[in-house]
Length: 182
Image (cartoon, rainbow, N blue to C red):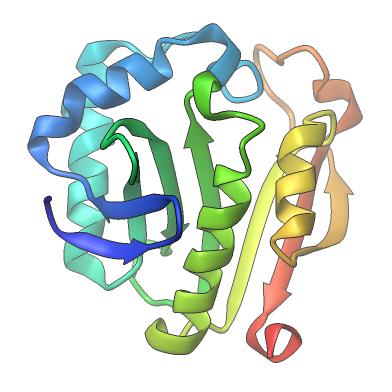
């Protein structure tokens, strides 16, 4: 298998490669997956020329980043999880993220992968704080954040030119510091 970042009981999180374009296109083409993100599929050209190059470039900035989630039992790509660093590549504050195929929902993969990333971030990478945000109406994502140990910080209301349904309820931010985790 390609470069493994970490393994859990049921998942392998590995670095993306330039051969993962089709995996990302399939993931971002599902309207259910994109419902709380953009509401529309991500065009292949955007994945090829922006999304995947950004993921690969982040690996050069430091140890954190976005990792392909592969089911251990089948080898199937089920999505991605991330500890996304800021532009400078530092790991003091990293953003927890996840995007899984609808076929993987409800199986605990997001929580399992997020907990493993958080543990590695705090114990091996020197992360000081993990934070995340989602739409307030995205109850499933909020549940993953809470099960992963993050706590609610605030609700805020960014302005969007073409808001998704539910935007009027705002975005929520969650966080977990290394001291709280320990």
